[in-house]
Length: 309
Image 1 (cartoon, helix red, strand yellow):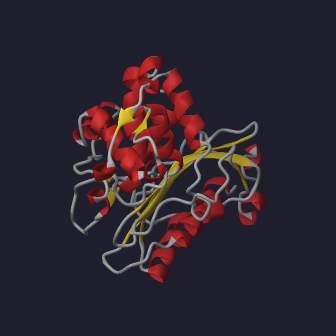
Image 2: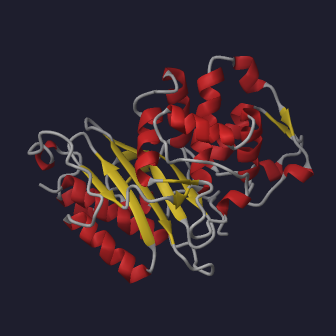
């Protein structure tokens, strides 16, 4: 599996650039969207221009794409109800579940959690560099969300009682098609037809909106999630690569076998409504490489569709 981390990416507030094609369409400007009285009906089949372009992208790359894009006035869905491997997207739910229960417990978030060499798994850039073999939940959440550290994800899951807690938390927020069954790194196996450790683009959009825009886990929980995810270091080649213009992105990436590459989050532009964007990908080829450019190009297509007049 391709590592989901990029330690060379900037760790400060993420100012992004939208693609020039979307800038010409008036991204975040009212003119592109005011003709709509409310959100457009979900496009679960490839019927609109954006979906047509996503179908062509699938045909050109051999990658299956599930996507949702939502603004205050428009929505684009493509394979929105199909199951895709979550991979590291679960880490947002793990941190959010802990925050919902203990956001105001400062002592808990500062108390070191011990771990040892036997706990380390692949793609753990932060925990593997530890010299103390103990990290607080605050540090583990930072490692899991900003650097996609897999050992940190497992340690947070252990605090919740295991993967089933993620399934329960998602269901509590209304996401009935989201389930976590295994730990890192097995949850990234992504075998075709295996429903374990999967979600749908529609569910991920619902969950991330609930947590990042609606503060459904609590106001402090939402603020802390946004603070971590706005400084994510792993998405420069994915959603960020498809953007052009000064906006901010709070997102989480994921990657697995069978060419799985995911990115999902919320984007903000000054004086404009946020955009929720979810892009999940997979193939049936066990030798498929993780193709970040598919996510970047899907981003360009969806934003262009959302902002066309």
